[in-house]
Amino acid sequence: MEPVARPPLRDEIRDVLVEGMISGRWGPGDRIVERRLAAELKVSQAPVREALRELEALRLVESSPNKGARVRGFTPADLREVYQVRAGLEETATRLGSPSVPALRAHVARMHDAAAAGSLDGQVRHLVGFHREIVAASGNAVLVSVWESLGIEVWTHVSIRLFRMRPHENAADHEPLVEAFDRGDPEVGRLLRDHVLGYAP
Amino acid sequence: MEPVARPPLRDEIRDVLVEGMISGRWGPGDRIVERRLAAELKVSQAPVREALRELEALRLVESSPNKGARVRGFTPADLREVYQVRAGLEETATRLGSPSVPALRAHVARMHDAAAAGSLDGQVRHLVGFHREIVAASGNAVLVSVWESLGIEVWTHVSIRLFRMRPHENAADHEPLVEAFDRGDPEVGRLLRDHVLGYAP
DNA sequence: TCTCATCATATGATCGATCATAGGGTGTTT
DNA sequence: AAACACCCTATGATCGATCATATGATGAGA
Image (cartoon, rainbow over all chains, first blue to last red; front, side):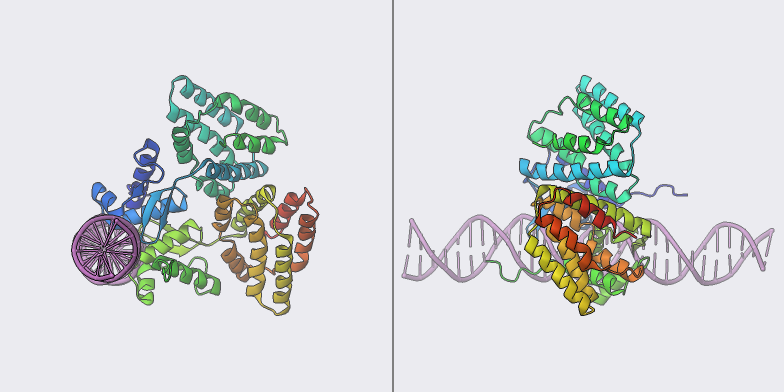
């Protein structure tokens, strides 16, 4: 049994930061001052530091010794690097396992709904969910964790806001992929790679 | 100018841990007790914790809330997962840039020397150096950092000791790759991928 | 003896305080 | 005014102490 099992404080703090970055409270280049945040959240400096280290590992913030942390600024070129890696990872995933086609269709459908309802959050959630399904289907836990470590969801949100990227006609863009998975097309890996690279600015 | 610029204490502690894992002082499954290590190194608990978090991100240790950290145990299956991801990353690297063939040859030569001199450390260092050269040549910083995050060097050491893996006839195994890079073989990516997968137990 | 509640100990999680550094402001000298 | 040394403040880095949890030891009761 495992009843309450509160998550460590650092995780909650990390989520606050991630949420803040998505909502725009902290934008690229903004400093994140450990003591201020600690005071605001009514916690001590230590867990805040640990949360920041975690975000550093996720490449969401950068910090230099004795200078503190700031939200990572990033250029379209940086984004491109992330997408290149991500494309490679997802292609690798298709070699290791096949996603559930119904699950993919469900994500596409909800992406559609969200778009119709004008919900940007919903679109991003299902866009990411679609790709996460593919990665998870690889059955490779390391692959999943590396993929997650790219911080796809946050970056997608942030880049949409900053670069005014339209989440394309997502639903439509994904149909060919679903079809390829459905018919077991051996080229699906390449298709997926090109699809992901197409997101890059 | 930037004279002394001591690295943060947590980094030194992390290196001590990594070194200890390579040397066998800590083996898979061993607990790492924050306070003991802190006392031994004459530092406080905080930087030790941060070092452990860092190693957690590198997948070298695992920890559960209120239970502490232990060196990650791993089965051949886990290793295989790492190699699959690594193979995909290195293949991606070949699509983005071409390594310096002389640099590759140099690594192979030193691998040879090290093998002749019976230096396991040397072999591993240049084996890893060979692959790192390829990844770095991609010019993609994200790719490099993701690849590094797999902790290749440590795992290679550890798995050689635990699984009594021979570092194959490394030098020989690498010749065909060098040749392929040299003649700009478009199949080099696939070759490299298979080569890396060949390391898997 | 076996079971289970209680408690003791070890240790992770968190805190509040202190130490050390970076940057900026100020006054002095030329 | 310019250059420079000094000091002041904000803040990251580290520490020592306290709080909270998990795990094993102890012993009463059946």
